[in-house]
Length: 140
Image (cartoon, rainbow, N blue to C red; front, side, top):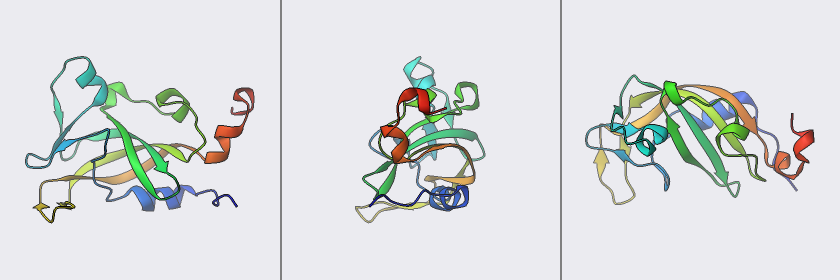
């Protein structure tokens, strides 16, 4: 049985306070910074930190946990899942957020007080898993 479709309020609640860290995105937890994926690919080493507005692309891993796929600065902003990563058969979202230093307890037990988390989350786009099974012409 498929999971129920998430509401915008559900998504905001799930993403608020999420640590900006995943297999695809690494932050400097000691400095409280993260790089825009597009800037890093272009060789720009500008860091994003507390108070910066970002766009975050997320994918729900097997209905269990949300994984950050990419973080972008406002210059490289995307607003649709299809434009960011393509529609797949799993819940995906694109959100805007403000970076906050809410701290993070890492799996090894260390505490990083400057670690970045997501705050003031706004949902820009959401693609539930069932969209990944639809014909491309039926998605818009």
